[in-house]
Amino acid sequence: MDQIGFDDFLKVDIRSGTVIAADPFPGARKPAIKLRVDFGAEIGVKKSSAQITDLYAPADLVGRKVMAVVNFPHRQIGPFMSEVLVLGFPDADGRIVLASPGDAPDGARLA
Image 1 (cartoon, one colour):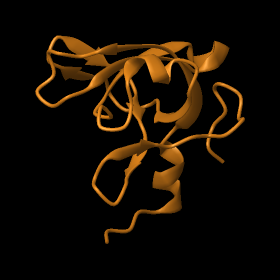
Image 2 (cartoon, rainbow, N blue to C red; image 1 turned 135 degrees about the vertical axis):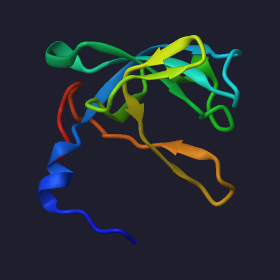
Image 3 (cartoon, one colour; image 1 turned 60 degrees about the vertical axis):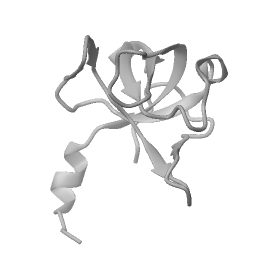
Image 4 (cartoon, one colour; image 1 turned 90 degrees about the vertical axis):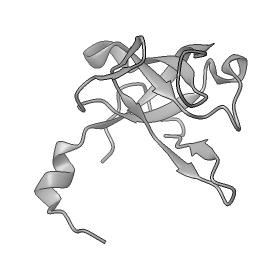
């Protein structure tokens, strides 16, 4: 396992947010869902493409709290520009389970 310094870790800005919109993403190479996530007044609403279709349907995601890296460069995913990286963990079958910040307010930074 590669090690990084603590100062490098501090550069990664991980925030809590609430999904306000979720739509199928049929144009993606791998099955994905397009998300709009509200990170509060400081950061605002950001877009993300997430490969989470094994466990989640778009309709079930609206209102869900998520965690995301908000300071990576934007990434073009087909015709969609992803602005943040929503975080999750693979389960025993390799399906992505979204990481949750619990009741943390939108925009709270991982401490």
